[in-house]
Structures are given as structure tokens and as C-alpha cells.
Amino acid sequence: MLRAKLLVILCFLSVCCGFCGTETNTAPRFELAVHTVELDGSPVRDAQVFVGDTPVGRSGVQGKLRFELSGKEGRRVAIRVKCPIAYQQQELLDTITLHQVLDVKDTAKRKAIERKFVCNALINKAVVLVKSNAPAGLPVLLDGREVDRTNEHGIAHVYIEMAPQAEFQVKISTTSQPELRPQEPSRVFRMPEGKEILLFEQDFSIEEAPKVRKRSRRRRVKKRSSAPVRLK
Image (cartoon, rainbow, N blue to C red; front, side, top):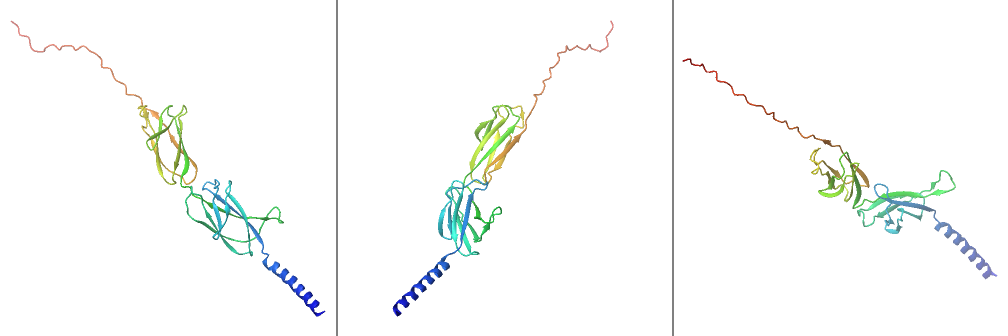
């Protein structure tokens, strides 16, 4: 009889401890959304995301990664991002505080804690739009190398891939049109941090050739001598 009572007590204690353990180990879960982009907002895929030193995944085609963390509300967590090889390899770090984010439209729902990280590209792309009143066929040079020619509307395009902040020169060659003014106009640009369209506007005028005056052919009249005439 005593043995049976002891077994009942032990079972009761084990059940209680089990419930206590479940209550202690159950922590609230928080959803996080990491968005990796370029400076102009274009998505960056395949960026590796860490919580502290633990990898949690890579950004997808849209530059996003969603994952969950468990812990006490108010706990601070370090989020670290490593950009892909085509981008500068600086460490991107942010610290977030775990908290519930309510949906304004539906307070019963919880929204993810969002963070955005910007990856700086090693090589950027840009376009220089050349607009002018020049005739068709004028060469457009990039650092001395012909890359396009003006069309019938005086427009040309220069496509560039360079490191951010690099300087380059765009020139409209007028050697075939010596009457245009100015001659050989050029602009120096600095490569932007993100994808941009740069503008090169140039107005030309035509210098008229100087008129050549024709010399009039006049017969020269010999002047008569005004010396006194001697009388015999």
C-alpha cells in the first residue's frame, strides 16, 4: 500500500515538473525580415545573413530573407550581413531589439521586424545621354575612344561601367565640321554610386566663312606733267 502511494506521488511530481519545464523553455518567437539592396534600391541577391556569428540564410532574388528568432521581448540581437563578391566586402552590422510589431490594419496579426542593408557595388553602370543640335554622324568619344555617333536628332548614348567616384571624359568630335562652334566640346563626369542617367547638353552655332572682297580693276590714268612749257 505504501509502495503504491509513493508511485502516485512520484508520477504527480514528474507531471508537474514536466509542465514547469515546458513553461520555462517556451519563449516568444519573433519574425525578422532582412532586405539587402544597392544604393539605388535595386535588390542584392545571395547576401549572407548572420545572427551574431551564426548564419541563418541568404537573400533571395528580391534581396529578402525572412526568419524567426526566439527569446525574451526586449532582448538585443546583432544582425550581420556579408555582401556577395561583386560588392565591397565591408561588414554591415545592425542591432535590433526583439519586440512585437502590430499590423495597423489587423491588430490580431504581427508584422516582421524589418531591417535594410545597403551593399556598395565594386563596378557601377551609368548612361550619358548626349543631346545637341549637331548634324548626324558626329563621333562621341569616351576618354578618347569612339563609342557612338550622333543621330539625325543630334542624340547619342554612352554606356559606362566603372568603379564609383571614378572620373571620365565625354567629347563630341567636330573635326569633320570645322564651321561648328564650339569645336571639340567635352565634359568631365564622376561615376555615381548608383545607376544613373547623366546628361551632356551642347548647343552648336555655325560660323559663316568671311566674305572675300573682289578688287575692282580700274585703269590707271597717267598724270600729265605740270612742268612749265618753254616757248621758242
